[in-house]
Length: 228
Image (cartoon, rainbow, N blue to C red; front, side, top):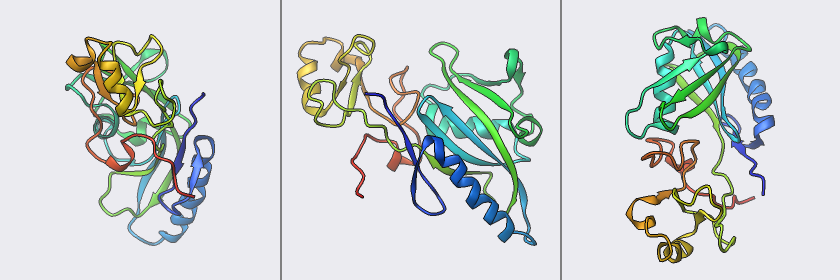
C-alpha cells in the first residue's frame, strides 16, 4: 500500500495532508503577520523540507546561518554518527554553512541537503515566503511535521511495525511488530546481532546507526491510530 502523510498545524491543531498543509499554514502566517505589525518583528523564511512522504514545515529566522538548519535537521531527523553534511543548489554548487538564510533561500528557491556521504540521506528544501513576525528568541519554529507513517508488520499486517531488519530491508518482509520480530530472529542470524533497528519517523530510518531524533519524541515513534 502506498504510504501517505499528514501533518498537525501548530496554530489550530487540525490535521492536513502533505499537499494541503503548506497552503493552510500560509493562511495562519498571513494573519499572524498582520497581528504582529507594530511589534518588534524579524524576517522569517517559511521553508518546506521533504524526503518523499516525510516532511517538515519550518519558519527560520532570515538572519540565521545555514548551519542552523543543518543542526536542526540533524537533531530531528538525521544525526547518528557525526557524519559530514552539506547544502547544494542546482548543478551541484555547494552552499557554505555560514551563508545567511535570507540570502540563500529566497522565495521559490530549491536546494538539497545531504547527510553522510557514504550512506547518504538526501532531503530537499524549498523556500516559500518571507514573513515579518514576532517569535521572541526562536530561530527555528516547527510549524508541522508528518505524523508517523502507517507502516504495518510485513508478516501479520495487523499491528504497526516497531522494528525493521536492515539485512532483509530490500528482500521483502523486513518490517515487524514485536511478536513477529521474535519469530524473525529465529530465521535471521544477523537480526539480534546487529540488523534489528527501530522504526522511526525519519528518512534516516534503517541507515547506519540511526536510532531516532533528539526532540519531538511524540512524533518520532511508530504509527498509532489517531482518535477522531
